[in-house]
Image 1 (spheres, rainbow, N blue to C red):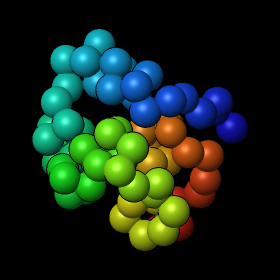
Image 2: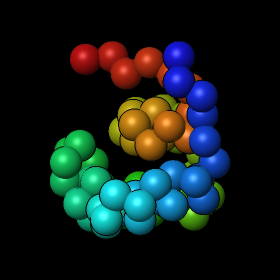
Image 3: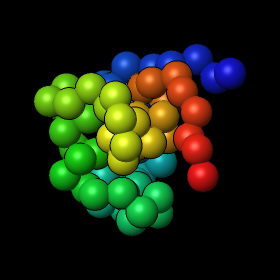
Image 4: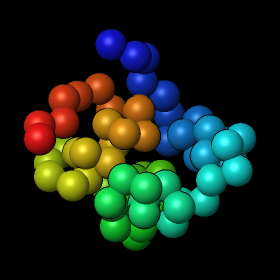
Length: 66
């Protein structure tokens, strides 16, 4: 399993790739406001789409069920 990173590190990773939150969200079929809320610490990503986004951002260790 890959190591988790902080929300700040995830944001820096997006900046390093030259990818906006909106672009990351479109690429993964996520709501951009939800991704922004995760990166700003307003939500935890415990269930549903928030969980999926947190795992994709690597700020949470978890499994994405298809």
